[in-house]
Image 1: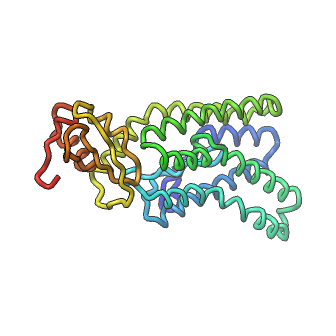
Image 2: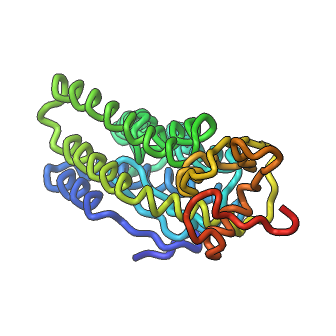
Image 3: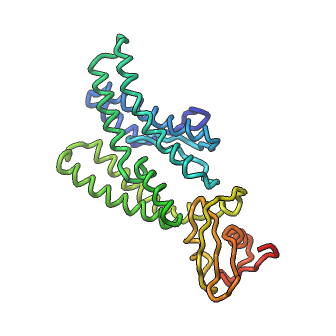
Length: 285
């Protein structure tokens, strides 16, 4: 574990595997340059996150980029998350110019410059594929969260990721079937999608807890119409990020429930029956 930018940095075993395979096959410069590009890419994410005051728990280097693990205890603004996500790919734009300037150095020649520019472009394009957990997949997830409730957006991005990965694998099977590194990365992404699917309920729980504790009031108001006997957890499934929610009970004129108040009541045990009709209206609701 390495300490970097005031955050822990962890290098995933698959990253070491890919790097070792490159070194053993005589591609030392390619290995060093790939490591450097990935490191700079991830530093872009971490620096942007720190600029917004986010708590960066850990930076993990992956063969295709990296993951800056952020404390998920807050419902951060969409624009902030967009900037943090895009700050990684943006680092690829200035690297060719840096490489061009480094040609004046004795250890850096046209061969190294060519390696960097080609690897830099390949990693950028690969990382922008709309597949989780690549940055392209995270941007797609952010877009879907504007259109769908939190939980639904999560399931949809993973579904799209599976379809995108299958299509990408077919193309690679036709043109690059003997690229071992590529198939290792595809296998890793497949495993990442599966593991992310398993922890969606945990992410959703953290989302609700963050909602119950937040003080910020969002400008976006969303109305949810529900039956009195509808399970509260079903109502929660209609909650969006960066939004305030008002639940209107069908058939009970004038009865409206504040979404945040409902979440707080649920966690505090004031909805013992588990249905919307079991909610106890506080004096100010």
